[in-house]
Image (cartoon, rainbow over all chains, first blue to last red):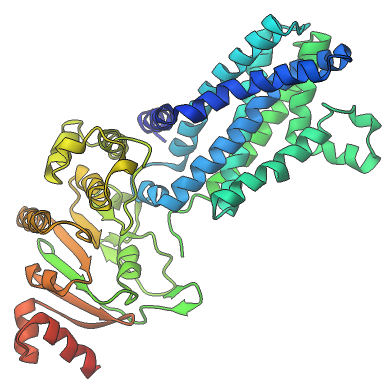
Length: 245
Length: 224
């Protein structure tokens, strides 16, 4: 691996996004918009909005970066640029690291904007510090990126890649405890939720926003997320082939 | 070798000489791209060995020494010509001065700041070619680099190919246009996954007694 190639890749990914202003605008505007929508949908139940609003700030980057990465990687695979890179002196880690750096940066901006709207304008409260929410949001973005990168190997068209969002992301959002506490679910679903990475992301976000904890429990959750990110990256890396049939 | 379910390129044996422009000619579907991919080392080869510059094809040590231009231009459509080249130059470790040189070599100075996806097909394939030229590779493998280019640029590119060969580099250029055959030092004629002939153009003409290379290819194809 080389720092120069990793940085070059991160800069390239950001440059591509910069040329696609509409995508960038959607990434930054949609989460605050949705959160505002939540606020007024739950106008009659402010306690529900108070409970889900904070964690949502950290969960949006997971969805955005999953989608952006799976399409970006699919394009690399179908346009021949991945094959070109793989015939050049670049390590797979440089490519993955470059994507990771770029999207972590975008996620930090996204989560900061959403935090300003959530905690500054929509009247949400967080017991714990906002920086912890943003930090977990960045970890979520990396998780979404790593999963998107891995799953892009199983899509041959952008239509298929987009379908992975409802297939992979929505079940995790349903099961993570955001909508219904996990112990109130059918028991097999509660077990299943233990195996899904977003469950730990939600748990960490809930600890920070509702309980105000930034102690060992939160770091345990973040540690599990880090493990899931590394696992998904390893699986994704295995799909970057130097040789193809 | 297998590609999908089809057995392709059974028993191909071929030597390419350094410092020459070798033309790989044959109709579409004759196996040119598969052979080129095997030489670059991106093709999974079921059996046989491919040695490039003394190393096994695709060896890490070759990634700086072999340049490959695919048939479809593989560049980032959402970046400008210069941004594409800047990125690949950094990956190859080529000096920044090579970026503008490569842009000039493929005559894209006027389009340098245009997004690649807004270029015409011919211009996009020149960006792809410029990318392969960046690192000044010893072996350049070009898959139909002149498709859709205007005759003046086609002539200029062939002149450049010969200049590169004179400077000691080796070029392997595929084409399905027979009139490009006579511009090559060596020719490899392919048909249905087999090599029909491999020799300099003059020798092919002499061997077949044909008036031009098109007739020579026909004579050789019918003889097999």
